[in-house]
Length: 202
Image (cartoon, rainbow, N blue to C red; front, side):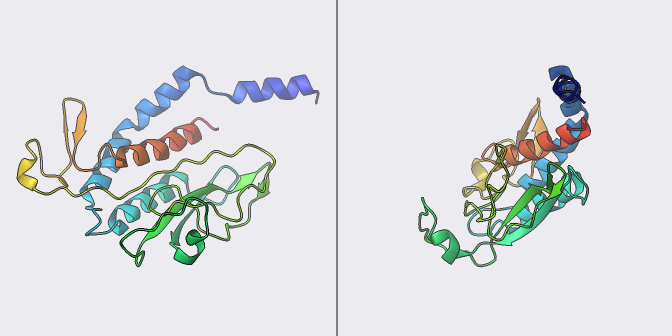
């Protein structure tokens, strides 16, 4: 196989903008349902993020998980305060990390080889952002999609005119509820961006 033939095959596998838009449209109702479930999970500091993280884990496992090439290893990682304390940019907070964890989805294989499980905490959605020691093993460029599941307080609830903070409502093309923009909408978008690419065979 010549370099040109290989390049032509690779180009043939790259989806067009129209292909991507169609895949996103096909998944839009599922994305909205996922976002609604995230919003319905009260993840204020007082309640904690575990409920929203469980929603994210189940959906990521359903959409992305598997053991074949192109599948993702979806895992929960308890936050190791002693580990992240030594990371550049660590910022102390006024609460503890008991019961808090990150949810990660890591591509299982690179160039046909199984990647070993990460040895430390990594983050795709959640709190306590950090880099794992196992990252950077490949020679290619890395892409990290990262978000947080916690939301700011919603009180007083009587100031919410369209719907209660944790009762998501779709009206006129908008989804209302605490965290629908910051940043559960972002989490839903990044998860379904990967789902759309998988649907296209990428």
